[in-house]
Image 1 (cartoon, rainbow, N blue to C red):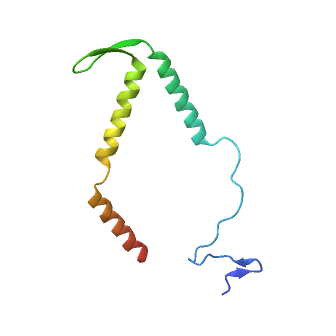
Image 2 (cartoon, rainbow, N blue to C red):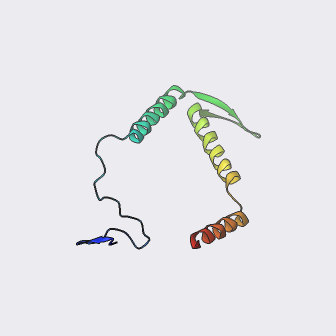
Image 3 (cartoon, one colour):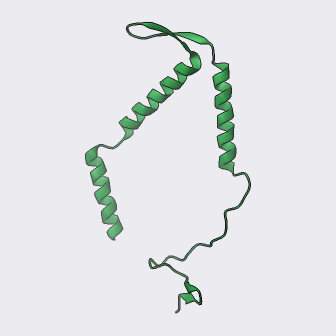
Length: 105
């Protein structure tokens, strides 16, 4: 059976058929709508929590806007969660070796 036409092969060397070269559909995508909605909610949240609050640290007290305190706490939580959930060097090496072995099969 022949896997080519007058313009070249219809399959790549890996045996997978080539996808169509149609341009992506235009218009507003659901992802864009969700991102705009989340941005609007975040701006509204920031405006609603703009008053100044007293923040107590271990050694001193300071004044800061509530939205700033919330954003800083969220950022610190994200950084801590990233490093806690990140695999160790040994785990990354095992994952890399396992992926290399599966690619050979």
